Length: 131
Ligand SMILES: [Zn+2]
Image 1 (tube, rainbow, N blue to C red):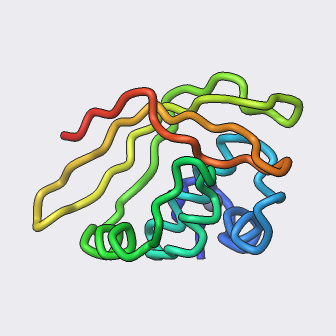
Image 2 (spheres, rainbow, N blue to C red):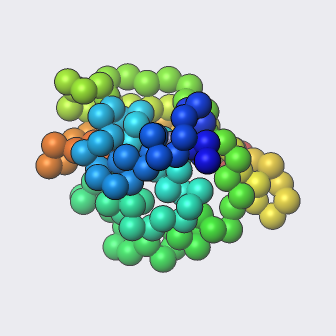
């Protein structure tokens, strides 16, 4: 199966790696991609695990219900700053395309990533435009 994150790789060679162990997300973009793939699978455990503990939702019920209610189409990475193997923070601007109740929509977000216990995690967003 091609990875839902849009890299031209098999899932097992792509987002499955961070899904098995968060430390396999070597860059903020890897983590972002693995989170998108987790949304396509409504994997609430990973969505929370890859979230900074300061900003993490208390439980995954809401996010899982929301993720399941969408048909996730594709992820577009528009821009990244920092977030490399030697960085401690970074940003990833992306568009996540989905269908909600028959309407084709996308979410455009500039996300902030930092390291927690050495691993990349999602801290929150600088800006979000929901279309
Ligand atoms: Zn992937």
